[in-house]
Image 1 (cartoon, rainbow, N blue to C red):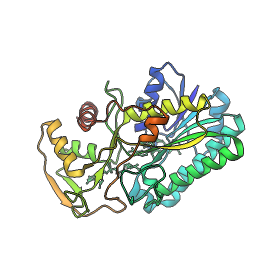
Image 2: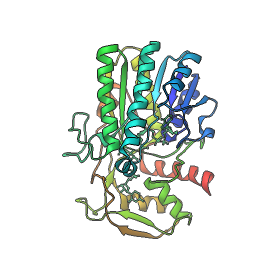
Image 3: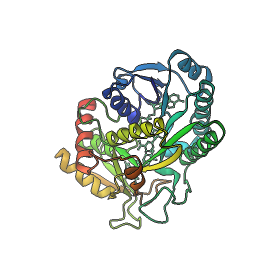
Image 4: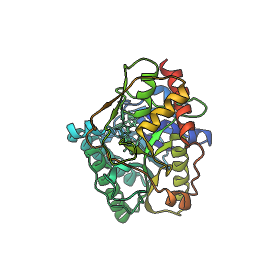
Length: 324
Ligand SMILES: NC(=O)c1ccc[n+]([C@@H]2O[C@H](COP(=O)([O-])OP(=O)(O)OC[C@H]3O[C@@H](n4cnc5c(N)ncnc54)[C@H](O)[C@@H]3O)[C@@H](O)[C@H]2O)c1
Ligand SMILES: O=c1ccn([C@@H]2O[C@H](COP(=O)(O)OP(=O)(O)O[C@H]3O[C@H](CO)[C@@H](O)[C@H](O)[C@H]3O)[C@@H](O)[C@H]2O)c(=O)[nH]1
């Protein structure tokens, strides 16, 4: 039985699907703060909070857990700047409870959702795993602290882990079984779709004076089903004893500006919607582009869905089904 924390959320639910598709037994522990009951498919769902140690222990008592995929976290950058206490308690304390319980029950293998936000504003792109780590926001700090904790837990308790630093997760299950559903929504694609559907008056581009070709930020979008596949590969390597404690970037290695993405959304949806140009959003680095060579080599990870049109069209299909 695999435990997936945060499995009712966006990235977690796609990994739950990938595990179920492979015939695995899955239990999801989720407090449903931003997740959705209907996204866990046929997995067992335990509604509980990681910051409550007894809820975590109850899962390990009830189910024979062989490994953990840990997605549960708060991850909205501006919220993290306003409420650092909430972020440190939820992300760091929640993870301490999980790791201590794993140690107590002798569960050795963990795949952890880290983020490109651990790097902050990069000095060079593409960003490799060894690039400097200077998080620009509280959210990124919480993830970097957890990565450090994982190194300590490996050294002291032989708890093995892989930290996967995703760049911009996007897209939806190609079969339409899951996708992104956040309220409030802060991410580029769903906001653009809501504008295309007339639910918002206009799409605002945050910042036009970045040192990029068209002045808008550049991001590296990675399909959520490709992320899910990387989790399964990482877990297999942990189980086979081929990895101990390591971090990998997961990105498509291609950068697109916010303006370019808006154009692709207009093309895929066939809808021309109003776009306005506003100020920069606090904490946004100008350019984030991954090198994911390490994951491709050591995890034998191959991206299948991460060209931008596939990302946008799968996300659009889901968005229409869920929100129209
Ligand atoms: N979406 C991205 O672009 C992106 C990029 C990099 C990293 N990440 C990381 O990936 C993970 C998943 O992100 P997402 O976009 O799917 O977010 P999400 O908000 O959709 O999913 C998080 C899930 O965790 C649950 N949760 C949060 N705190 C919990 C707690 N204390 N106890 C139990 N459940 C809790 C929520 O209810 C939700 O279902 C997060 O750790 C996030 O930091 C996401
Ligand atoms: O209405 C909008 C929304 C976003 N943007 C811009 O679009 C880009 C992407 O923004 P968003 O979709 O909010 O993603 P990020 O802020 O880049 O963060 C995502 O990607 C990071 C890693 O790259 C992860 O750490 C975060 O968890 C994840 O939310 C940024 O330049 C934003 O300024 C706009 O211009 N207008």
